[in-house]
Amino acid sequence: MVLDLTLAEAAGQLGAGATSSTELTRVALQRVEALNGRLNAFLRVDAAGALEAAAQSDARRGRGEARGPLDGVPLGIKDNLLTGGLETTAGSRILQGFVPPVDATAVRKLREAGAVLLGKLNLDEFAMGSSNESSAYGPARNPWDTTRTPGGSSGGSAAAVAARLCFGALGSDTGGSIRQPAALTGTVGLKPTWGRVSRFGLVAYASSLDQVGPMARTVTDCALLLQALAGPDAQDATAADLAVPDYTAALERGAAGLRVGVPAEYFGPGMDPEVEAAVRGALRAYEQLGATLVEVSLPHTKYALATYYLLATAEASSNLARFDGVRFGHRARDVKGLRELYARSRSEGFGPEVKRRIMLGTFALSAGHYDAYYLKAQKVRTLIRRDFEAAFRQVDVVLSPTSPVPAFPLGQQTDPLQSYLLDVFTLPCNLAGLPGLSLPCGFTRARLPVGMQLVGRWWDEAGLLAAARAYERAHDFSRAAPPLEA
Image 1 (cartoon, rainbow, N blue to C red):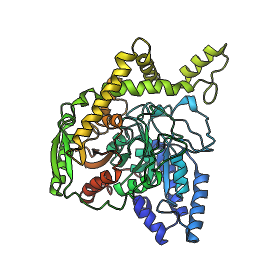
Image 2: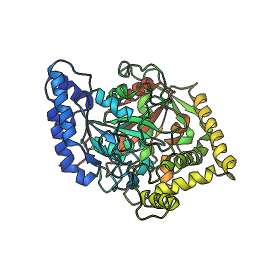
Image 3: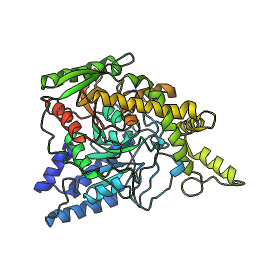
Image 4: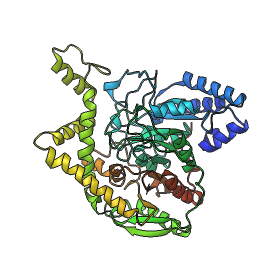
């Protein structure tokens, strides 16, 4: 099947004239039509727009004017990134029917690179969740076992890539929302350094934590996508004005001499034994590849979960105040006065998890509690960052599990606090603004994927990708396909 090709392989076939963008796009759309009823990965498909973009790509290649490796490759977009002319809901009823007038910068850059955008992918509502179950449009399902979650919040992106509905996708990561679903679906997901990719047009959850990033089947594919996405943006003052390196140039440099940090705080009670066994196997594999394992300590990790859920919810409370029933999205009917309009529009439009986080954040920001909660959390955030600064004086990357558990059954996580614990290994990376990547490192006995997390230095996505590629080259799980037939 042509969709078993990796993104890089598909780009190679397009470049060699062995296939066309129109052919790839038609096959992808057919597979989406055949499987999406079982996976609920795509919330909406833009078949006409995709086929038009594919035809334009084929015409460019015919003239010898290909724009690069992404030209003509079918991709998917998480539905919290604005797509001009195509509905964007962020997985929420409150934005149902909202059609943005512009593209998010990340989407615009993919279009400029010639990519074919198939449609919008499912997510937890406003990217708040770890299982895709808070989506107002039903959960996405894991192609390895459709009774289980693909993770969240970028669950639709992960499911679509794993099920071969597209060659890659965009996700967003606030506390692990790219990396955790990548781990649960056997795919590769990269959260760049905060500020490496523009957030313009990303529906905000927690602005100091949110970051757009690529999801694909291989490290090389993620490198190709990041190459198109990274860089400054006049529309986002927080997008760093830094040169973008060639992320594929040093991908194959191997692991010889690499110093891999092993944090004791990330290996403890509560982890699934099969997950721990797979990750420790990856540590041994790095040693065999010439890397050195170094024990490091990240002592403030134990405060990271509480810190994150104070800061993220506080920012969510502020960011989501704009959804008021006046300017866009859901507007309550038959209301008497502005106060009732706000209250009913928000009550009807937001789901339970979003309401919970808004209330938590509003409480943390309230006059009587600001210093005790929000301000103290900001101070602890600084300590967490300093822990990583100390660790990176000794090592090049830090390796840990991505998720403490493999994909779990839909409906199992009924306690919000238990659900929040699923982010325990991923959210420190967001608090520190570091780049982090999840890649497959094995399977459980039930044939569920296990992912490991690599965290790199600030702005060193190139080194992070090279370290991940060294393992992937020796232990390539990208050919393993879910037992899912159209």
